[in-house]
Amino acid sequence: MPELTIPNITLHDGVEIPQLGLGIVHVPPEEAQGLVERALDVGYRHIDTAASYRSEAAVGAALAASDLSREEVFVTTRLWNAEQEYDSTLKAFEATLSRLGCERVDLCLIHWPVLSESRSLNTWRASERILEEGRARTIGVSNCRIEDLERLEVETDTRPTVHQVELHSRSQQVELRRLHAEYRIATGAWSPLAQGVLLADETIGEIAVHHGKSPAQAILRWHVQLGNIAIPKSVTAERIRENIEIFDFELSEEEMATISEADAAMATEHTVLPASSGAGRTRTGG
Image (cartoon, rainbow, N blue to C red; front, side, top):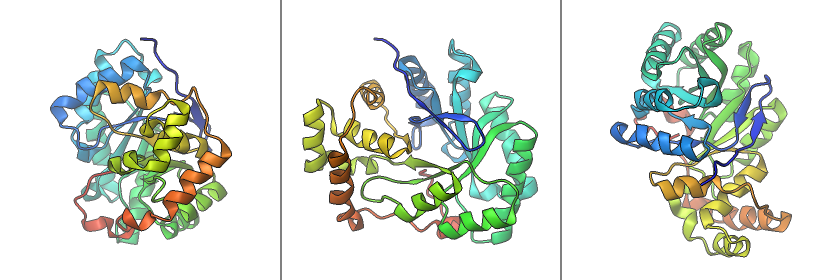
């Protein structure tokens, strides 16, 4: 089968990021290398991992086994809560690079904000140092509230380029996306398929049939046309390829509105944990 091509989004610092990536949250480490290798074979060029996923070494092994150069694959990873604070962030990042077998990552995210304002700010300042030293091409955050982003804007020197949150048609993060547009922060969507909940949605199913596509493809196309960076997870070769085959059709304005409006009314059925509770959480999704 021919390799597929995913378009890039240009971040506000000029770095280009593929608009669709492979998420490997909850993938057992012993399975992650093969999964990443299959994804690279069909055209994925963005792999999304995290220290807490325990898969960074597997991602590094897949990159080493690939015929692709390191510059051809965009690698996103995340700093876990327990490592936050200035010195511990730098130490944890060194460990991440060692596991990946890379001299730098493309995007380094803070996994969750913590309740302590000073810890979050010190962690971000360490991320700025990592950026200045060239060990990350760009830096961002995930799972933040509006007030978290506003604090970074006022109290630090570098604006995040990406904010990744749980985002799908039943949790559309409208206010956050408005702030992203104002700050020119790219919106990343983890759990873009709502952990599979949306696949049984009749409205999405009808739209998918109209285009000769699957419900997952219709949902991911909705994300792409909104301008989101979508990070779907799959552990099967068929689904991995299916999720990337979304750039040969387009949803109409009416179909985009139908998905947004129909599912917004059902948003209470699928809610997210407040970002402010990140300090003590053990959840690793996103």
